[in-house]
Image (tube, rainbow, N blue to C red; front, side, top):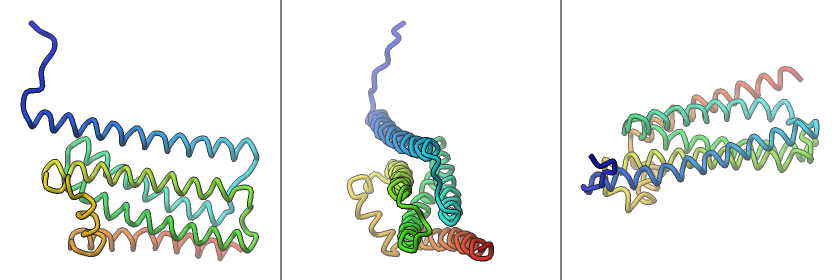
Length: 196
């Protein structure tokens, strides 16, 4: 009995190709996670920390990132196209939050509320989180393209169509996620103001 098996159908080739792409995406995600871990170590070794306002904002970003990762895991492990469709709206809200947190950080930096020593670390952290979310988006798109092969060659057009409001499901999921996480952010900011 031979131990090796040959890939003999187009479907098997397509599945193997999908897994190769996913391995590369997971590797990228791991690289960004290592960057975050190393940044935390560097802060600890230097006895530095982010401002209380920045920490509260990061807790909201962490919450949505955990949601994106959970949905991505479900989409990948089950080849769940419905879960895969839920990734892109969350990823877009991550992008929105990161832009908001960058603006807030610059305001804190200008006012002296945030230390220049942690400026680069904070911005790099946001960049790594954004890229992890992007990887999740790529995973979702690959799963959707497996069921709808015509999307694979036009992923950019497909995503642009979503972001321009061309898909009612995306629009509703994006609005729901935006409301949820921006309400959390507002609540954190209100709590921060009340404690001053």
